Amino acid sequence: MTHRRMVLGSMLGLALAASTSGFALAQEPVKIGLILPMTGPFASTGKQIDAAVKLFLAKEGATHGGRKLEVILKDDAGNADATRRLAQELVVNDKVSVLAGFGLTPLAMATAQIATQAKVPEVVMAAATATITEASPYIVRTSFTLPQASEPMADWATANGIRKVFTVVTDYGPGIDAETSFANKFKAAGGTVESVRVPLRNPDFAPFLQRVSEAKPDALFVFVPSGVGAQFMKQFVERGLDKAGVKLIGPGDVVDDDILEGIGDVALGAITTHHYSAAHDSPANKAFVAAFQKANPGMRPNFTAVGGYDGMKLIAGALEATKGDAGGDKLIAAMKGAVWESVRGPVKIDPDTRDIIQNIYVRKTEKVGSELHNVEFATIKDVKDPVKARK
Image (cartoon, rainbow, N blue to C red):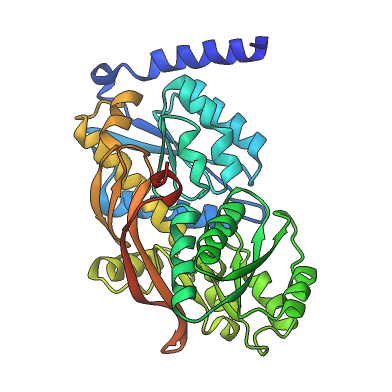
């Protein structure tokens, strides 16, 4: 063990002793370190989650289990080294009881060791690689996993006469998860797949879409991170794939609600499988969307906002269950098996994997009045992360 790790371990140990004395600190606030990409190419994710966290506190109150929640927001700009440094500072200096946020997989993974050493729960509100929750026993997720969303798309494509698919995914954990989980299931059903991967930062999709055009598939399966879909769709049109009869399919990130109006009519007809749409038809969701848009004019809540809102709901519910004891082991124990009615539908934290179990919806991008929306037309109920379910 390096000297730096020994020092970090001892500092985290002291922070743990100072911050988890339970009922003795009952009058003190429970601090949540919220680490998000508020600037840079993935800022839309950070802004959505930050807005949802603020909405939760406004709607459902800041006091839970007799303790007031205090959120400390930090911007990591989507840089994993910054995430790790900020997490360490939040634990050691700010004495946070929970770390939360994490807009991308590398950011969530960068914090796993700190969460384990300090015994501080890490609530992942966006990042979606299946293996994240295996990196620390203190990680719990309120977003989704890419295999959870992608395998149902393979079933839909097979059932709807699609036989040849080209996949274009971002070359990092979630993209590889999406590609692998879709392709394996689709090929097992008799389909054929050709695949390419695109760099995460500053992607130019044009040369990859040219390969799609030459391959003439029945459908193009795409995964790009939340907020990047507009650039992809622009180049999809420039290559004429929309007019060539190539059906656009994939998990819902490419037609993210936050940017859907900006994408425009080219998104019409896209078929996606995902766990949330702002058009989800329930009274709870209609109230959520109305409150979110009133508090954030010009913004429509997307799936990362719901991950943020439900992350706060999970933390608050755990504090209620422990009667205000913010010790990491007690909070994580209370989070395992938690059940509630989300604006996305019924959800549960799998007590074995600490991943979320939820409905996955098949949606089509359509005009509703003058607005574009992802309209759900089929439901796959109570979907676990299939990667861990097979283990």
